[in-house]
Structure formats: structure tokens, C-alpha cells
Length: 236
Length: 271
Image (cartoon, rainbow over all chains, first blue to last red):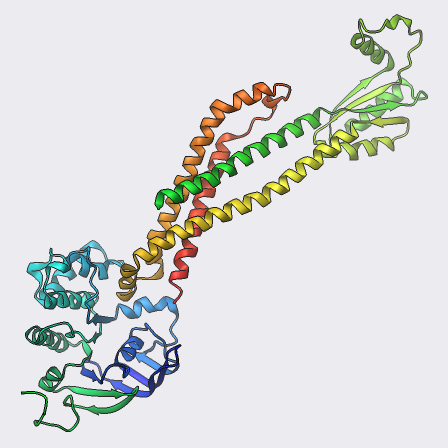
């Protein structure tokens, strides 16, 4: 589903964010992308929805090479790759319903489609009862749910999450991760970039650690810290 | 901010409209004046009446010629007497000094010199006269005005486009968050551009409408006073097609608005 070959990314200011990355992620996986700040997690995600283009290498999403894709085709890629951010990025002057519907409307969906899909997504994330509220009236966790609903409304094959629980308390964090798991069970490939050690350790999924723009480790049922197993000095 | 853009466009289109109106009036006046110019062809004395009429026919066959009038010397003398009535006692004239003449009006005043030249070459023609100086001067004047006009129009249109472009840029900047999210969820560039193009179109068209209204008021109130003051100029023979001018100005406003908006938005959507 996602494939990177020899990918490097150097920013205009000279910073080498990614260095000769090779990576493959199968359809339906749930993958954590970890590493301290500035190691390239966000940059990698940006490549996957073509916010950035690699300086070297090839990027494939769902079998299609996207780094050389024509600019005009990028919107269609983005309808197939949902993105969720740490700061939710909801439109403040629209209700939850309108925010989710927005993602459908810009793709030219009919009113009938909108009326069918939006409630479905809101129900999936558990926000049906708050659809008429505005973002500032919601708690952080609810705002993130709304953002997830919006990311899913076009039925994307991939969901990218850039520090989705960064602004949330532990309890809400669990709820969101549970939601993401549920979504993953339905077949969506999910890639989560995170700092959250507890979450990673609890879920035991594939963990890819980046360091200095390179893949430091890639474990199938990994922990946040390499080789620490059960004896983690940081958690209780 | 919106009002400023509309007002500035209105001023630009107003100046454009005033200029176009003036230029068209001058052009029509010159054409009319020039078309009244007659070419006077004076025939040699050796040419008899039949030959003269034949010459007249030959001249009439030229497609550039509108009216040909044969004025035999007797008729010429009669007209002269009429014109000089009371000023000179023409009974003193014992013989007719006038030659046989042919008076010609052409269809397109630009052709006057050329037609005159071709007639000069015909046998039996003594002299060909027309108001050479006046014709040349007027033709040169209208040509210069046309060229000046084109230059000025381009400058004005460019200015209006820049103004609208700047206004739209402010709107784009104000809505950058919404645009970013639009692009994130997969809106095409066309979808993002559309509302801004519409705004540019509206601004341009509204500005043009305001200008047209002001021009209309001036046309109804001020123009009659001007034509009265300059009553020696036959303005009546230079009717400007107002409805066409209105449409042109509206079109100019719309095009400028859309163009300015397009440039603005495209620069933002560069990636």
C-alpha cells in the first residue's frame, strides 16, 4: 500500500530530514512511527499526501507513484489519504456536521451523498449527538473525533495521523487510539506518528523508529524503547 | 476594502469611457467633415461638352467615388453669381472665365489624395483641387489620437487589474486557513479558485457599472451644454453608439476583474 525507495528529503534551508529511506507498509497495517522531535516523522507523512516532494527516491501509494504525479492529480490522491493532525485543523466557523460535509462537498459530491455519508462517519466516531456544535464548544477529544470523521468521509484507504493525541489527556488518548483501532479493523491502513510511549507500548504493533532521518529499527510487535521489553524505566 | 477596489476600478473605467467617447466623437466628426470635402476637377478649355460628360462617367465608375456632379461653365457662372449676390456686380462680366468642372465626393476621406491623383492623370483634366492641408492634418490628428488612445487604454486596464489583484490577494490571505484545509481534503485548484474569480468578476463589473452611471449622468446633463457652447461643430452628425460603449465598458470591467483575481489566486496556488 505504501512503498518508499531510496527516499531522501532535504529542505531548502539545508536540513536533511530523510536519508535514503526504504520502507514498505502492507494494506491493512497499523504502524507507529516514532522518534524524537525533528527526526523526520512529520516529513515522512508529508511525502505520503504530497505536501512535499522528495529530493531523491520514489514514493508509491496504493501502487501509484506519487512523487512525480502531475499537480492536477494530487487532489485525487488526497481523497484517498486522510490526514489527522495534532491541532485538529477544523474550520472554526462551521459546525461538526459542516466540517465533515466540507470534505465531501469539495469533491463535488451530491447533496444525497453528503446526507448519507456524513452521519455514517459521525456515528463511527461517536459524535452523532454533537453534530450541530461548533469546534470551540467541544472538548479536545471530541474535536479530534470530528477531524477523524472528516478524514474518513471520502473512504480513504490510508489514514495518516501526525501526533493525534498530542493535545489530549491520557484517558481521551486511549479513546482515540481505540477508535483508530476500530477503523483499522475495517481495513483502513493506519500510520501514526507519535511521542506517546504508553500508547505504543500498550498496543504492540509494528513500530518504526526514525533517527536522523534514517530507519533505526522496525519491529513487528514493538515497544517504544528498543529491547526494553517489560522492564521500562519510565512507565509505572 | 472592497469599496476601495470598486471605487478605484470605477474611476479607471470612467476615464476609459470618457476617453473612448471623446475619441469616437472626434473620429466621426473628422470623417463627416472630410466626407464633405469636394474634389474640384477643372477641365481644359479644349474639352467639349460630350467629352466632359464622358470624363464624368469615367470618374463615376471608380468604386471609391460617391457622387459626381458635372458643372458646365454656364452653370458654374450662375452659381457664382448667386453666391456673390450683393457683393459684386457680376453683370460686369462679359465673358465666362470659368472652365467646365466636375465636382466629386468620395466615400472614404482617406482616399481623397489617391482619387485626386488618379483623376489628374486623365486626359482633358487641367487641375484637380481639394483642401489638401486640411485633409492631411485631420487624418494625421485622428491617427495620432487612435494610437495615443490604445496606449492609454492599456495603461488604464493594467492599473485596474493590479488594483483588483491586490484586493483579492488580501481576501486570499484572510481565507488561507480555509484554503489549506480545502487542499488537504482534496479540492481541485479550480474549486479553490472559483469563489475568488467570482469576487473579481463582481468587483470589476460593479466598478464598471458605477462608472457607467456617472458617465450616463454626464452624458445627459453636461454634454448638451458642451454641444451648445460649441454649436459650430456639427455634433449631430457624430452619434456615438452608446449601448455598444456601455457593453464594452462592462466587458472591460468583468475581464479585468477576472484576470486580476486569477493572477492573485494562481500566485498563491503555486505549489
